[in-house]
Image 1 (cartoon, helix red, strand yellow):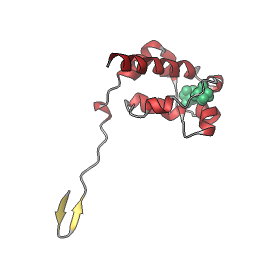
Image 2: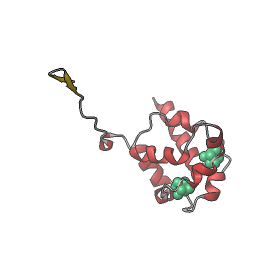
Image 3: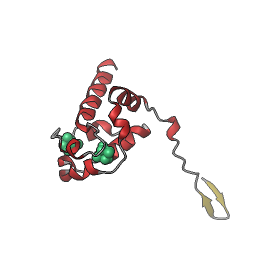
Image 4: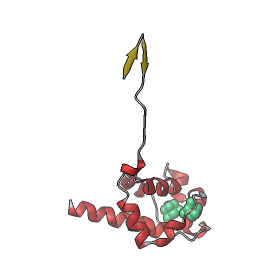
Length: 114
Ligand code: SF4
Ligand code: SF4
């Protein structure tokens, strides 16, 4: 942080999504092409059982995943109850429940290999 005559100028905050690791999202899109069709309408999160009881947000999870922001992904996934309501309301036919199971499997494999 620079100081000028008692004033300070904060460093610019830049979020560079291009530097994030998006391999998990790419794997998901390859395995389940319907996940590419999400338009972010929020129907899934509006009807989500876990979202009604916790801070879980399935729409946001998908957005963060595509940006490669997967830091809290594991904790978030554990909140899903796999009830399947989200996929019943999705206007784009995204199988969100299958997506969550796929992500669980990938994260478990990563744990196993590390
Ligand atoms: S309901 Fe379907 S299209 Fe809408 S945000 Fe959820 S996954 Fe995406
Ligand atoms: S399957 Fe998971 S994400 Fe979908 S509505 Fe149920 S708790 Fe929410």
